[in-house]
Length: 259
Image (tube, rainbow, N blue to C red):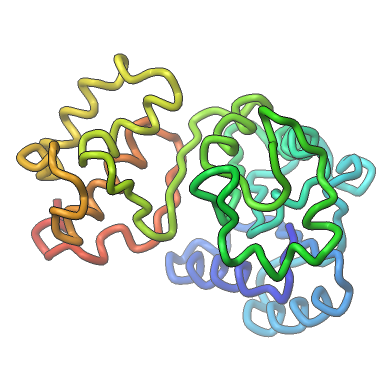
């Protein structure tokens, strides 16, 4: 969704090709509302991956998806980069995505996120000039502002619209310096109101990832590798069925990578 010039699709297909898995794609539909962008994406992607059954077209996320050729239960993966925050009615669009997925299907929402609802991040400023960026349905509880959302608002929206096994994996480590290592790991479980149920798993993660001895320190007093392991522990504490991680062992030595 919102394929733009195709860079995200190119990265996905390149990764699948590297894993010798691109042949498992039965059909891939890249949607983009700007015809110029769509034509360029089609030209680039079909040249790079001529054997992939690619289709290109538009999809207005704010209109019923079924009427636009996306049948209920027909998709194994629905994903978009900086698309869903533009939904006029976020819950309605997420329900459309949920309905489109087959059993066990994945929704991947790659989005910029705010640290709090009122803290606008720098990447948003140019886009605030666009009507589509601000023309959204607001609610004081579920969506208090237009633009990017907080992690808490995304988690709540996904829960309201039927999604389970949700994990938030920041592109950067995104640890909170005011919390200890342990409190950072516990944070998703606190948001999901299941901390007590996850205590044994948290203890196991801290021990297995070599964080038990520093669990009460703030992240700023740990090494970059230890911070990365803290972020990994935080990402898996809710035991998601799908976890998307960008180079999760980049700052680990060979022994840690092997483990």
